[in-house]
Image (cartoon, rainbow, N blue to C red; front, side, top):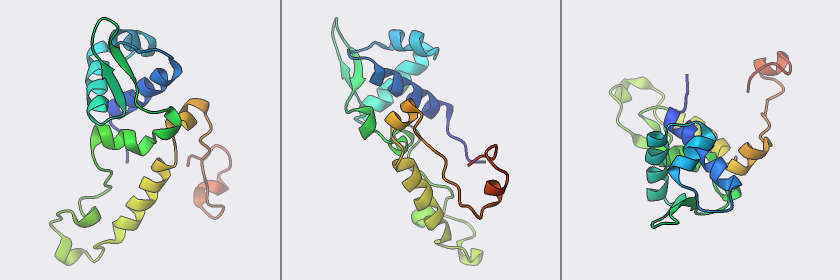
Length: 152
């Protein structure tokens, strides 16, 4: 199963909340408004600041603010900031694999990885905030035959 880390999930929540605020916001305020523990919010914001997604301001009126609007921050950028490169398998993009010489699928996961990266890059945090992300289904896929309750 593909699953995002809890920190990435928290990062998306924190960034969307920052995008709703006009002013610089502290990690305790963000913690209270999101329900995410303050040490966790502080850790996530520190990583996001190091990656240039948020800006940290020091001082009495210090805190965090977005480095760019939510429309300009993709879900892929947040995942990569928190969890590192998006790689479905160890062999994607020439990574190390013990079965490389006998596998027969060398390089084949690259296309799948690229498709997922493309989809995640096309969804902005603004889309997430506004609930404008719509699942895309291939009409011939098994999940399409299940109707509207099928997951994408």
